[in-house]
Amino acid sequence: NAGVTQTPKFRILKIGQSMTLQCTQDMNHNYMYWYRQDPGMGLKLIYYSVGAGITDKGEVPNGYNVSRSTTEDFPLRLELAAPSQTSVYFCASSLGVPNEKLFFGSGTQLSVL
Amino acid sequence: QKEVEQNSGPLSVPEGAIASLNCTYSDRGSQSFFWYRQYSGKSPELIMFIYSNGDKEDGRFTAQLNKASQYVSLLIRDSQPSDSATYLCAVNMNRDDKIIFGKGTRLHILP
Image 1 (cartoon, rainbow over the protein chains, first blue to last red):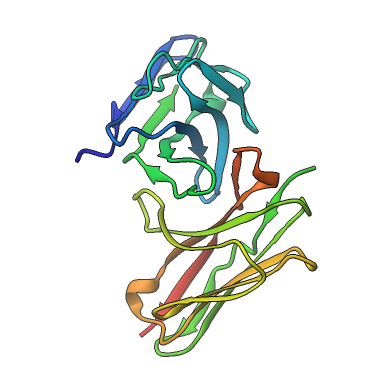
Image 2: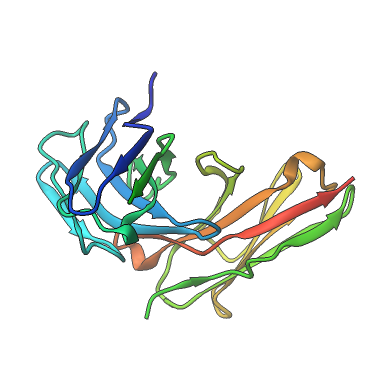
């Protein structure tokens, strides 16, 4: 099984550009999450979803949007990139309560210059 | 404010000794607690989870939970150089589906 797949692995954006980080999982998990990790820091929750058609804000949602049209896919959209969005982005999935073990993708290193 | 706190370290422990990592959380209603290990440049991986007060052991790892004190810890016995990593504490706050992470503790095992 591929697990959780994120694309791209690396990306450089100019200020004001837009992009979509792709995340797909093949484990039929209902729960999916987007986190960002700044250097030397923990993970900050951006958005999460408990099923297709349902999304909710996390700790740091400003500047991002998500959609969940299928169980497998949970893309993260950056509309107007800013230097403060330079980070490593991780997508994760889980079966959900009470089995909340997170399976992580390999991450996307994003730089906004 | 809901949050999870950890000492960022680095914590240096001699090889073969016990490493003790600590985490506190603010939401008294939290129910699920996790320890993830993250090597530099890699994704986090789950090493322990605990739901009930007390100790839970898995090989060299022991998770300890004290809900009254809002405190969760991870003990690593017989520390090995391969244990050198950042350890992230994560909490499912009040079972509302949000899994919140602390900043992580960097652990160095000294050969």
